[in-house]
Length: 169
Image 1 (cartoon, rainbow, N blue to C red):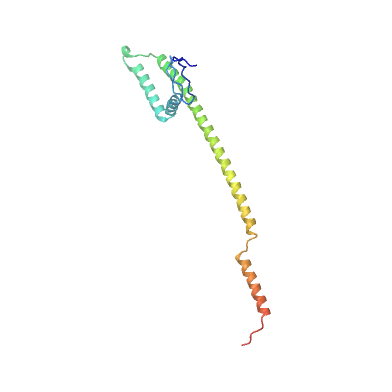
Image 2 (cartoon, rainbow, N blue to C red):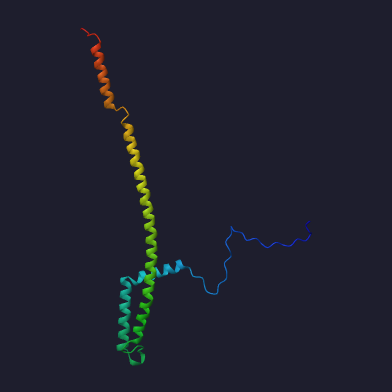
């Protein structure tokens, strides 16, 4: 017997719906967005524009810290701050370039796999078509061609002419 007041069942977890996202203490990073950003930076680091801007910046830095009044110079002769800035730029550039190369390697690997599958399909299609052409050639060996029909008819016509009584004009 069932009582009037049944115990409520716990909510069933539906397998056809995704789970609600959990709260995290750290921000959620989109690895694809970060990868695209690293590729853009790596592409910029490999351009002539970057080299020109970097050269211009370093020349301005050196000129300012050599020829400006002593009170406004911010990096004296051994240029420690410039060295630190260039080291920091290099320490970030190298991993960013490696990340971009890894992403490019992944894309190349996927493209290579797709090309390999396409080549396999092309080879299979070519083999199928060559088998079909061979079958057609074999089938055509049994088909009466126009030249064969002409020669047979000419032979029959000669036979008929030989058997028929000669006509006299």
